Image (cartoon, rainbow, N blue to C red; front, side, top):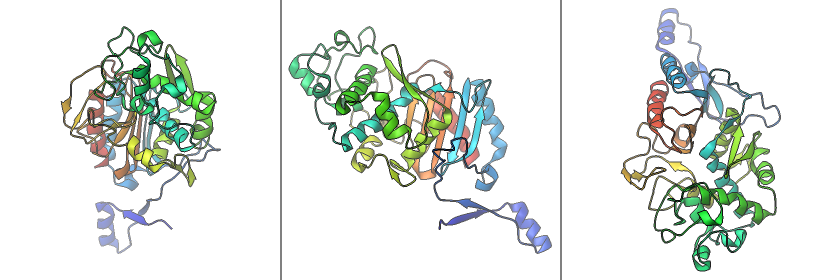
Amino acid sequence: MSSLLFACSSESDSETEKSGTPAIITPVPLDTYFPSITRTDEWDTISMETLGWNENQVDNLYSYLEDNDTDAFLILKNGRIVIEKYFGDFTQDDNHAWNSAGKNLTSMLTGIAQQEEFLSITEPTSNYLGEGWSSLTVDQELSITIENQLTMTTGLDYNVEDAFCTDPECLIYLNDIGTTWYYHNAPYTLLDDVIANATNTDFNSYFSEKIKEPIGMQGLFIKVGYNNIFFSSARSMARFGILNLNQGTWDGTPILTDTAYFNSMTNSSQDLNPSYGYLYWLNGKSSYRVPGSEVEFTGSLIPNAPADLYAGLGKNDQKLYMVPSLDLVVVRMGGASTEILLGPSGFDNELWGLINEIIQ
């Protein structure tokens, strides 16, 4: 039986003193709730009042989200929905592009393929793409591993005309492997082919079997130019957040059992950018780098957010935040808040400033 916390207001205390009648209190469940994988419209909720959150600040949050072209926004506590808000014509059932927040999906799927012994991330990428997948020499190609793809340390030239291009002529040597960090999308996209070839299965089918269906998600990876972009509802993104907070287990069903991989995925994967794991963004580190820049910035990626937050961050401010210490999942889908950026943006810090006004 789960333990319970009890919350009551000062008004209730006052009423108790006047009448001698015990105040009515609402139990706050501490167990993790997993929404049904068959009755997907059903989802337990919990009120802000029960949690002791500041409801007076919610309108400020909604105004900010609406002013910044948001379509969907959710906050989950222990898996239960606290806030769910849709804007304009967007609804609970509508699908939205995750953009690079979908890198989290590919990262976890890579870990599953490794635990099933279809691949090892320390192996050369060439083992699964064959010789000549790039314009590098054979020896240079063999030096690039799957782990380099996961950590953005392939050394491939990100100054090419189209950094999304996965054709061999676009994949050119620039730096020694593992010596630089740069957010280069093409090597990441090739992970889809690595997984498909390693498992001898269509990428969407393997993802559906291993992650999507076991946790009740819906959605699909769709080719958009060179990119392979995942589209789903906001609630499906939230389900994946719950899976992460439970370290790869869904309601007792193991999805990713390789704890070493999970820990590497959600912690600093290299020293060049400590705020990056295996395709996951990490808060609370000493420095960070961002897409489109070679500059190293000092300090935490999102100063207003909890230090243990990790995230999927996609173009046009697609956000999946996961906070283990608070058992929170936060989802935001929509258009770009200001300028079009591939991952982190000033929106992250502003949004967490407003969330803090509610939850603290």
